[in-house]
Picture (cartoon, helix red, strand yellow):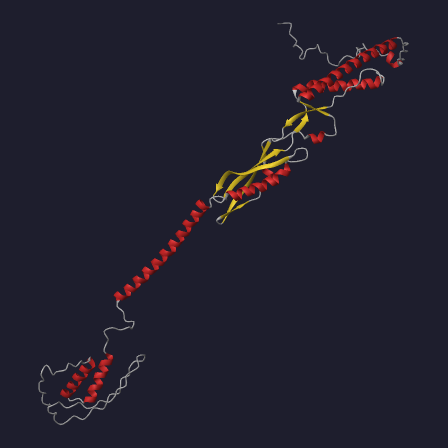
Length: 396
């Protein structure tokens, strides 16, 4: 015979997952029967082929055991089911998401956090090291110094500023070349350069001749000037008579030829600004020049007569003028000598002049008289002894 079906169970409300389940109020215990109910007969065994496997949950097993225990202990089925439901709700699950972790899990989590922190620090250090390496690569290899184009352009600007300081109408110059030359490097942020500016002469320069070959010409110029002065003073030669007065113009010599160079060095600095360089203005006050150009161009002597010492044609003209000047100087000297003799004879034939009257006070003065009269002798006798000799006794 089939076992009796269990009575239907009343529905039990489940607690919400977000709120703890509230325990239902315990039901009133049922009155115990006077005698235990007889056990139902055991069901007949079924063949293995006809047995159907039924999966039972722990709650069903608990209900089964609770009902069995209740039946054995004499507890009502409703109370047994309520107790089984409460035991199922309070049972600890095998896996939970609640913050109930073990010490090993906490250590693993802390180790993971430490590992992540070390990894972040390592990334920051690696990024900083990469930036430092990049900075040194850029500053020491890629941009170690200003570019050649920038230096060349700055040198040309300096040449344009230095040209008016040396070029003029008397000394015409032109800027031919400007090169920036490294001078020294005091530190990593400063480089000192100087612009080497080459200036060229556009015209030759001339100055007064002052060589050994022109000494005779300059002396002859002075002698000719003195002879001309005496001629005009004493009227030695009439206007249309005597030798012709020669002229010895200013004698010039070549000092510098056209095309000669003048090198000017102007210092300037380059300072680092970030990864680039800034070129400072030129220090024109500290410039230096290798030499000084003397003389002026011939345009300066255009309105005055002059001769250039050196060329063959000019030398022939100079010799002819010097010969004429010597002839004139000698003629004037002879005439002056004759005029000097006439003046000497005329002065000798002139009447003697009356001697000047000497004053009476000077006539009574004796130049040989003594400065101090002999009657006035000095108060001290120079021949007297400084200490008189002591008197000696007669008995000795």
